[in-house]
Image 1 (cartoon, rainbow, N blue to C red):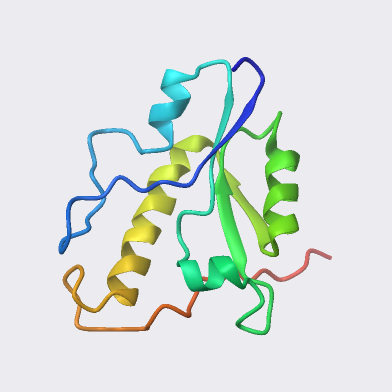
Image 2 (spheres, rainbow, N blue to C red; image 1 turned 30 degrees about the vertical axis):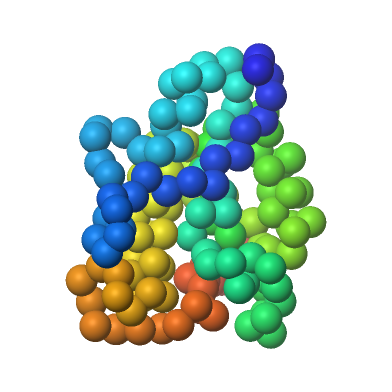
Length: 137
C-alpha cells in the first residue's frame, strides 16, 4: 500500500438507536492510517446521506464535501474524486480532523433519522452542511 491513496468513508458508531461516535483517543480515519503507515489515508464521503450521495445536485447548488488527510501526496487526487462525483471538495486539514468529520456525521445522522440520537429535531434526509467562504482579494 506504499504511496497508495485510501479514502475512508466510514463512521465508528454505537448501535442503534444511539448512533454515537465511538471515541477511544483516535478517529476511525486515524485507525487505517496507523494500520497502513505508508499509504495516504483520507476521510471523505462520511457526513452526507444516501439521497444526496446518489444525486449531489438535488439541492440546486454544489454541496460541500469536507475531507481530511495529508496536505501533500494524494490531496489533489482525492479532491478530483470528490469533484468528479459532483461535490465541492473542501480540505479541512490532516487526518486528525477525521474526528471532527465523524462528529459532524453523528449530528447529520441524529438530525436525519428521527428515532436516532437525542434530539427531537428532524431535518429529513435531504440536507447537507455547507462551507461558505468569501473569496480572498
